[in-house]
Length: 62
Image 1 (cartoon, rainbow, N blue to C red):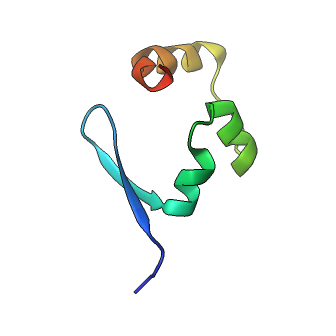
Image 2 (image 1 turned 90 degrees about the vertical axis):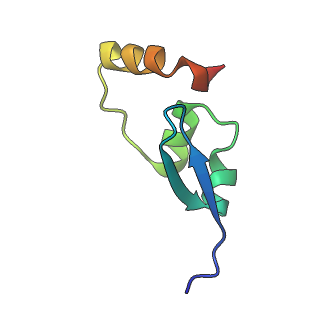
Image 3 (image 1 turned 30 degrees about the horizontal axis):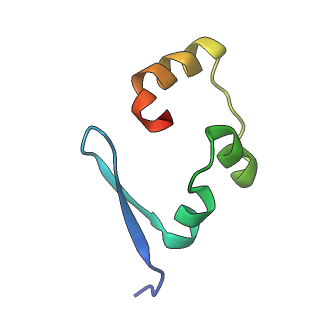
């Protein structure tokens, strides 16, 4: 059994998922670009795809 604390995140569509508390604190109040830098994630979305995602999830960017 893991002693790592988990945090449950809930999306606007009520979908939930768990992440480690440490990871949650690493991404708290960060922009998507900052999160990509922290975790070395390559953004493979086209500008059009990214604009669509941001529009669909604009609640997350408020």
